[in-house]
Every structure is written in C-alpha cells, then in structure tokens.
Length: 99
Image (cartoon, rainbow, N blue to C red):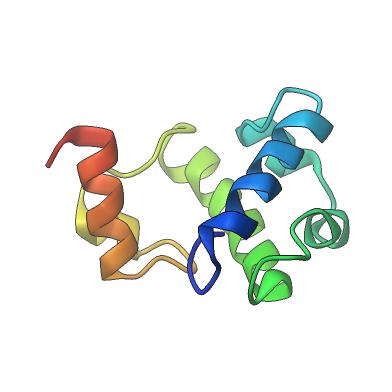
C-alpha cells in the first residue's frame, strides 16, 4: 500500500523506519496496536499518507478477524481490502505465491 503513488526511494526508507521503530519489527500486532495518527506520522513522506494510514489500520483488523492474521490468496480477496486495487493484488499474488 505504501508504494502506490510513491517513489521506491521514499517507500524503502519508510519501511525500514517502521521496522526499526515498531516493537516487533513491523508485524500485524504492531499495526493493530499503533494509533492511526502515530502510524500516519511514521509514514508521512509517502503519497496520500493519511489515507493510507487508515487503510493499513482497517486492513490489519480485517486480516486478524477474517483471515486468521494472514493475507487472502486470491485477487478477489486482496481487492476486498481497503486501499488494494487489481494492480497491487496481482503484484502480491506474484510475490507471495508465484502466481
């Protein structure tokens, strides 16, 4: 989600910072525990950061409740998550499942 509308040169340091700052190095529980405004501050350099912070928080809740903490393994399931479109879903399918 962070990479959408954001250069890789901005996204990568943002991810590294999240991994450094969050207690468990950026896992689902970290995202569930962090306040949305604090998350927004940590991702503030990426495009549409305030909207993405909300998407990330809502997605984390959905993943915990509906997918037992995992991510959906279909394009349709991925596209059902806030902020995920077809392009991101297909990229995820390729990266996660080689599909």
